[in-house]
Image 1 (cartoon, rainbow, N blue to C red):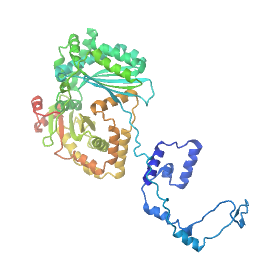
Image 2: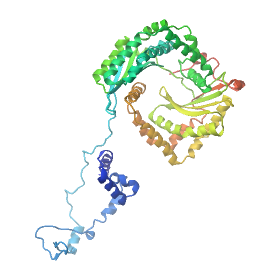
Image 3: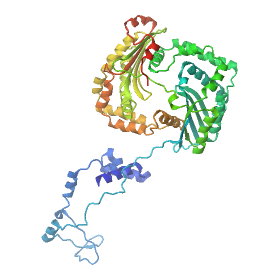
Image 4: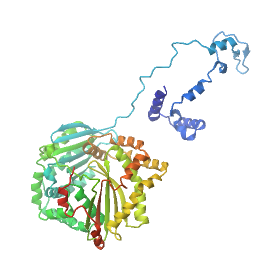
Length: 563
């Protein structure tokens, strides 16, 4: 009975009409008079824990010698009259015989506790709005969902074209970079008119294929998608505009060696952490002789084969979404790629017994240190823990490295997810200290993090939890933003639409011990980690004391395992 009433109370609290105006105010005021102020708004719905002792205490008052009985009926004899309203009544005490009979009543077989109410719901979770896979065939996958939240006549199409393994090679990567830049340059001619009409489109290069995003009013979005697709297959850019585009791109790659030290350090990290990653210097060497005709020829090669992954979300029918998806395949004349030949980004398998250490010298006057730790698979539980620890670490790390020790203007820690793995990274850039010294000081601080966490009061742990909960409960702000999130869930998270809810549920269950165990990974020498040290010109001699994992990165990578 208690559980049934508690379930109904929870439903009422969540979904019932609470009233409004004066009636609501009077009800709250009355509750504030009868109950503690913090419970006044919820007093009608609070069912905490069953208490048999309290039940029997109340039942103990239900005795015949503590009872007043009232009998109302026509013709009952009376001997007194009430002075204000003239109501006739009589009053008499129970006789000893009646009391004795009441104290030993006969059992009534029909008087029993009710059977469990089969109509009480046991599951009241709202079904999450989620896309439905409406096409699943070789070369084309489409997820579709109609908007029921924003109530705007808008739609967003998110598309990725997955390509064969050979498209992960250096020349193909550089050509695809040029291709997407050329297409966006061509689209600029209609960008203003499209923006005035509430439309937007991007064609972008990504590690796993060409991305297309088209969003806007549903009446014109399909025709705009057709326009974008028509531009993608026929290169009509004046040669002088291509040469200007190429000059900007080559200049950016050439000047990368003068970029901030931490940016160059991240480039080196990506180079050894990702199987097929190419630095600006490598792209520069491959791009020198590329001309517009090369881009035209590459366009035909690019779309010989490709698998379309697509999400359609918004004010759009399933029929129109299906037509749009098939139009992508038809306009680009794509043939399916066998799944065994689809290019995937693969990252280094880290070994706890052999941490990776990379080092190089820069021609700028700052050194930089970046260290990463693998926290585990990107499960909802690990993600919830990592987000809480991110909030715990951020401020102390910055205060210690930047403010107290004054190592440099750039000091940060951050979490990231790569290929279904969770990482935490620490970064410092300094003109005064060499990268190995930054590494030493950072590790000294990280070794003390578990003890710092032990000193954190419980109420501050709950503040960390509340902040993460609020972050996870943030709503999408537009149809395009939701479509992009659905695309990520569909194709990066194996259509795990409940991931956010699962993460929140795991968040509520995390204990201090759970968090400390993950934090201990940052203090243990045997954790799976990787460190990248970039030395400024004035710190070059410090490289003599560093023992990197490799001197020839390509030879070293050929001996490593990536997945």
